[in-house]
Length: 323
Ligand code: PBG
Image 1 (spheres, rainbow, N blue to C red):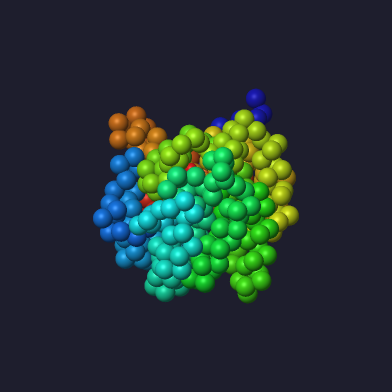
Image 2: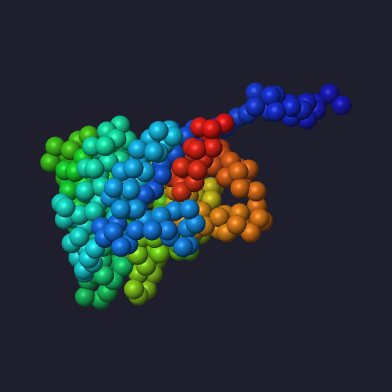
C-alpha cells in the first residue's frame, strides 16, 4: 500500500499543518436585539444565553465584543409601539436609530449592520404594508424600507441589510441612499431567504410572529435552489455589496452553489432555530458543546461563506481569545 491518508492525521500538529479551512473570529457577526422599553429587556427563553438588551447594555455588549475580536454586529429593534405601517421603524428617534448612533459613538470602529424589515414594527407582524386583500404590497413596502433606511444612514449605520424579500428593494435602496449622499453605506441583501421553520425562536426574541398567515408569499420556497441563484443575481445587478443565504445549516448546498456562481462576498445566517436546537442538545448532554460549535462554524467556511452571522459569535470568540 503506497497511499496512506492516515499518515497526515497522526498528530494534532500535522492535522493542523494540513488543515484546509479555518474560522476567523473577524468574519463573525453577532446579532443584537435592542429594546425601546427597559421592561422588555432580559433573557429569551427559547434562545438560552441570548438576551434582549437595553440601549446601554447594547453599547456595553458591543464594546466587549469588539475587545474579543468580533468586529461587527447586526441590530434588531424591539419597538415600544406597533401599527399597520411600521411607523416606529422610520422614526429618526427609533430604537435602532438610537442604537446605531450610540454604538458608533462608543466603539467607532465597530462595523454596524442594521437589519431592515418591518415585521418587528407592524401590528400584524408581516414584513410590509398590507393591501385591501391582506396581501403584502410589494412596492408600497419598498417605499417604506427606503424611508427607514435613510434614517439608519442618517444615524451613522455602515450597512443596511434588507430581510423582507420584496422585489426591487436593493435597487430602490441603492438609488435613494446615493441620491441622499450616502454612497458609503453598504447593502447586505438577504438574497436567498427561505420561508423557514428555523426562525421560530427569533420571532419570540423580536416579537415578530405574523398574526395571521405566513411569509410564503414573499420568502422563498425551501425546495428551490436554482431560484436562489436568480435572486442572488438580481440583487447583485441591483447593487448589493454582500449577498446572503439564510438559514445556513439546512442550505449549505445553496451556499456552495452561490460561492461557485458569484464573486461578491457571501454571508450565511446561522439562524435562531439552528442555535436553539444545539443549545437544547448541549443542555441535555446529548452533544459536546465546543466540538459541535467548531464543526458547525467551519462547515459554513468550507461551503464557501465569507461572513458568518451567528448567535455563537461571542462564545466562540471568548474561547478563542482564552486559548
Ligand atoms: C426579519 C428577520 C427574521 C430573521 C432575520 N430577520 C425573521 C423572519 O423573517 O421571520 C430571522 C433570524 C433568526 O431566526 O435568527 N424579517
